[in-house]
Image (cartoon, rainbow, N blue to C red; front, side):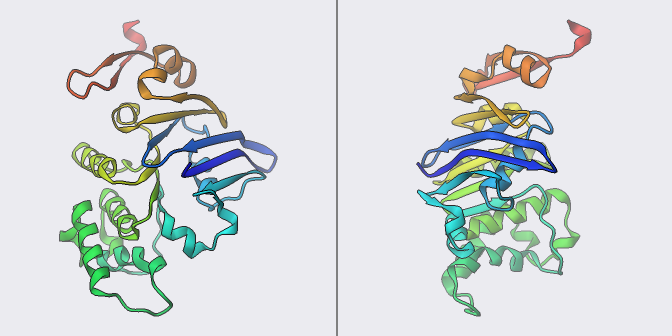
Length: 257
């Protein structure tokens, strides 16, 4: 098992956000985390990559408790693409992507030719080479997202955690980004807002509601009209897409019922 959350519970001022949540993620799986707003998706991911600390439970990365690992050692294994990434100083895109190499370097060690090659390749993969000399603060929301993905690629971690990676992206860049992530020979955990994207790209899906896991399995097994009505409060039909052969959800507005 590559990445494990075991019986996580988390609360803010006695308000329970997560309650006894467990996730088990295998090598090179693409695992999606879905659920309505406020279900605890982002909180769960933040507990799994150590931005938050659970009141109960443990997280294991390659069989090691993450709280017994140094930040540098953990960063060699785990890359994170959050919803928002504030940058407090003016950095160029290339400089920011280069920060992905930091876990692999000694203090004040300069970039090697290998580092430069990895940085360039990461920018090409994320489609941002033309932005490399721009200041990060001058970019659009979608461009910033792709820069942060490029930084994660430069990190060359074996596990990537993404919190709503398609936020702020137009349809073309959503699909390009998801195609890229899907093609990587790594383990991926992603909180996804778009259920059809989750159905198309994920091997397995966890459904979160009110801080608890409601369902887990392959998209075709769990994305049913009954679950969509129960968890998301929507009427829908689910069929097999003729091209992708993956489940595709058709939402039915109330006026047509």
